[in-house]
Image: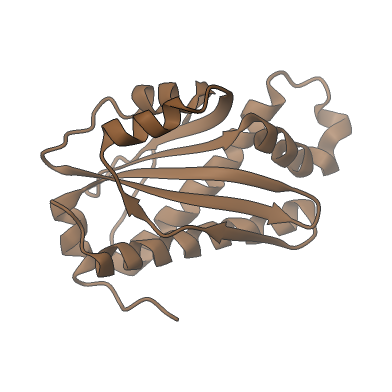
Amino acid sequence: MALEAAERDVLDGLLRRGVLRTMERLEKLCGGKWGIMSSSVREVQPVRLLQSFSRDKGDCVGACFQSSSLVPLEFLITFSSGGAASLAKAVIKPYAARMKAVPDLVSLTIGEVANFIAQSVLAVIADEFNVMIILKSPEVLIGPRAQLLSRSFSRYDGRRDTLLVSQVDIFSERLAADCSLIVIVNSELIKKLLSTARKPGP
């Protein structure tokens, strides 16, 4: 069940608002001004997304989330390895001396940043539709994007689910980090929710 262009626009606005909340949190953590550049939400078939991701042979760092609520959602948030390292360095800079001995620091930090993003996006969606959405603990993954996508979305059902993709580039005065935000939603349910949504702002 495909989404209409207007429905994708509403979702894009909600995702942007959620990610912008994360930028406010990063500003408090790291200082400086943070922002995003985001493409519009695209609806894609899993096989095409896998084919696209298969061209990228390098590893990335990602976090997979599932909601445990009446609003079933799955998120995969990935960063290129270079972007993940730069972002992690910026986030932990104020605490670098104390965290020097922590193993897998990049994975842990990116897992937390991805958690910020997912929680912020879900908070915006929950507020918009007056529903409760609770995330299960994330799973942090490292590997090629196609491999992460295959592992994360094994429960995808093409008869009822819609696969949405938004490219979100995070930047500050000192770094840029590319981020892919992939969401699986139940098509019928999201259409019902979107029918009650307010019109997106300019």
